[in-house]
Length: 418
Image (cartoon, rainbow, N blue to C red):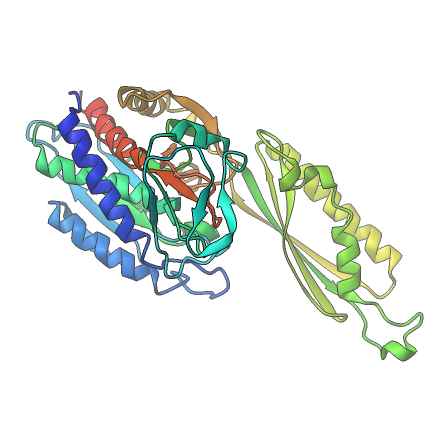
């Protein structure tokens, strides 16, 4: 099977059209609500996707009470016994930057000069910000209008999957075995698989939630969350000598003891870090949340040991202070599980090359739904979705990336059907 120019043109136009519509739908998640899904607005996109899957010939399409969308595509006649696989992408966008009233802007035939934003004169997108832009000269680039994120993470992944689904309906010669699609909520706040129905998924899946064109991500962080509660003693500040124990002031001193070289802004590649995620409180009670990230679990264990010793030191230094320290494991490095399934990796690598792309086997300095699925027995590598500078006002995607992710989906199906 070779995807010809007609199919390529169809994929690009379809994926672009759907992407431009999806990003306008506010699906921001919120870790503070305590509900599942964390925000009702995620249902707005879920309902649309469920209807589109039905219109494209998928069976057993459902949107459950937790905002997961599932759909089954029957195999091409004669390929019913081919191994089924799943395609997964998440619907929510990061709460780090507003995802409300997104207005996508297409910058035609990018010429290498700074890209300006119609609603934000204080920022511009340059090659200095993102050296990858050099590769996209001559292509159309999509950004937001500058006052919101774009939402390419992960609506570009959804658009690529849906374009492939549309191509299977329009071009019967694109043969495939059984395909299962699952769109998830709340991935950005670490709950993308919390309520997932594992019985609806096949033996393995692929998430389309990666970065730049050509990437196949096989490793992710080992991830922990450290919550530290400081309990002090309040006394009138005018009469507090040797009596007050100021919880939030001590919390600030505690946070300052984190090695600056092991923070996100000072690390890259395989280097891990402490990330001061939130801090709040007053003189009576204060809270710090760190996220700990590394590709080696033993390095995070060292960080937890350091925080524990720091707790003990501060309690000894400030009589009357009590500190509660709690560690929660968020997800594991998925390579632990993926390395046991070389066929799943090799077929994805081949699909990327068949799409005419340079394969880049790499790691993701973050996590995906695939990490948790892999740990739960469904190995799930992560394939590029094509966006760059996720979670920021400068997030962007070259239009051909939408087409290429759809092509990779089609080639994956072909590779598993032979």
